[in-house]
Length: 335
Image (cartoon, rainbow, N blue to C red; front, side):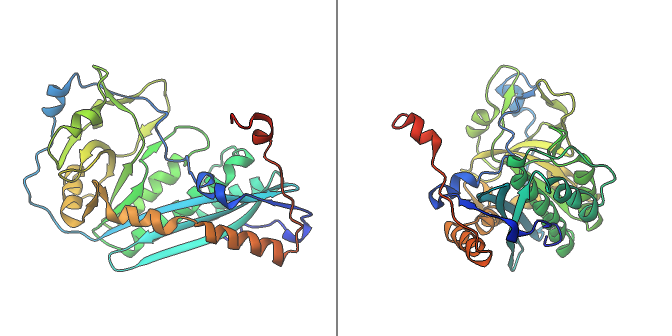
């Protein structure tokens, strides 16, 4: 992480920190938000959906579980770029490890070098993609850190389950996680006998009758899961693919339903991996507690953000500039 930070902070002439009141809204990763994708499920109606419910007989194998999540926040703007912080957390059966916050100064001059450092030197990818816009770079660095910690978590447990926040979708755009990186991460998990289960909080799944699939599942007693792998498609997308099997599932009796993607190990079918997850952990409104804890521990708090801003200003003696909120000046009190 430190090697990927080539810009000299001493060269900065001004720093405009983001108000701490906006830290939470700044900390909203969009990498795994697939709510803008419209997923068509070629299942006609509720009756047809219920006919595809995978039976759960109560037998399972108790497995160790690890979960990974991350966050990023823009700390402020400088005379030639932005300063961002990224953080990740890995939750294991008996411990929690956090990574960061790591601080990066990203500019139009160095963003290609930083981006390609991760792509080539860290993950060893043979090809590179177009570097994202400067405003998207904090989230892309967050994503790289998360992928790195996912591999670390995979190496720490065997014959277990690795929980990812998001999906196993690839090919959404040139700026998302490269398919080559996703495939190598999933292969690394299988090498350790681990299954990867990705839980998406925001997505759109509709039956061919235009019914929301989650509203249908919400009326069924849980745990319940429906295999959608051979029945799912994305409107208007020729490149999107899911690197695993896709389920709509309620993982607890009174829990919320989610879209869940599963990359199984050689010895465990995808549906059995979900059954093992149900038997191996507890849930918060149907959401695995390990994944919830990973989110909590990876969040950059306002106090941490403020401490990072103060360190930047004092250590490098950068003059603070309070940039006016043009939106409020022009549109207040209506905006």
